[in-house]
Length: 76
Image 1 (cartoon, rainbow, N blue to C red):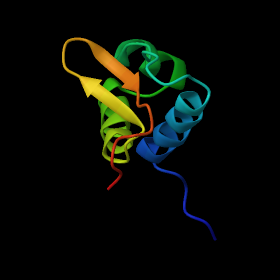
Image 2: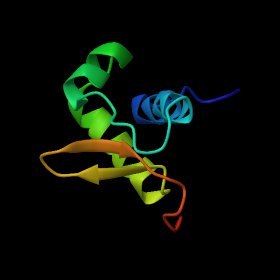
Image 3: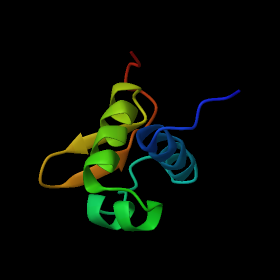
């Protein structure tokens, strides 16, 4: 039997899909807007965004926002 997906895993999957549909350099919506559209808490969205940043998919710029990486960032 398969374990249910954790909220943070679901948010990561949904955010990966969103990022894949956006051009490099594009700014993602605010954490609050993402949380509302994904049906998750802001903390869950922030946690998922940190995972995507560690993978090199997005760049988080404090006080500016989250941007789709251009693909040149090293991946962990």
